[in-house]
Image 1 (cartoon, one colour):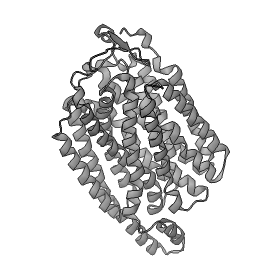
Image 2: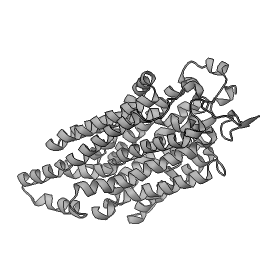
Image 3: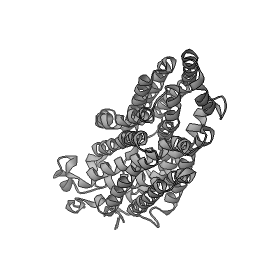
Length: 444
């Protein structure tokens, strides 16, 4: 007898695993391994939240210039997603993960000469190389999550991964600042001290501040390289695109390219919107709290606050998806919550407005895990390339924060958050209609 997914209409054998190569008795171990990888995603990605104000001070940048951190990092997902898909096609998913970790280690090593010379452009290159490794890693790892169990509960498993990701993100900025700062108030003191120093004294102080990045990034490079070696010899199985549940072979044979899957194309746009609102919220909140009058020693905690709020939402998702709430309903509700808090942040002022940005974590958490299973539904043998297409949507983390920084410098950091509203509106549309575009033509 067959069971039908609430969200997708996929027919699955009631007593069979959806992926032949992964046995049920090994799923927990495999999920733990992938969870470690998502922890690494979070640790690397959300360091940007504190690197932005750090570089802004050390390299004396405007807000728009500082937001090039997110641009250099996330533009890699657009440039390298399909090359990453090709690489994984040659190496396999597991070896792709190993390669991704080693490329990330190389990117961390680029920070050493960059820190010695206080060269902002080289820092950006290091971020780009790190993100290239992450692109390979994510192109390989995200499909694992969707196939480690029934498709209708994929958002729940994505939520587990989200907890790992955001827990790392909550820890990373505080650990980083603990390694590079002498005390909590140092950044505020240096910011106040610099205007009164001679050019030579200021340069010496900023060079010393930049050089503090060497130790943490050498440590990071060693850790990433070591993890790559461990994964290489771990028992994580490779996966096959053809083993994924989906349409019949005849139905897929009629599909010639990814453009034949409208719900996938719209899903990539939804990923763009999802990453945009998430990165804007987390990576700007420290600067925004300072704009609203907080000292850096207090503002520095806000990126951790928003990520902890997201962890709470992920835990809720783990509990209620799919037993009480479908993946589509989670996306629908999250987009509404995000739009409401965005409008409140724009209308209100002071630290009250900052907390509205932090509360975006309630809405942002379940958007990403809800989009992936809806967008990959029915892709079968196209899964690897489809995953690469969705990964290109992460470029939203490069473009949207840069637009925010431009509006922030020219208008006002609070008003600049208006760019998030249309992003949430599109996510609402995807939850209502976009996720099923073209699906009626598939035969299951």
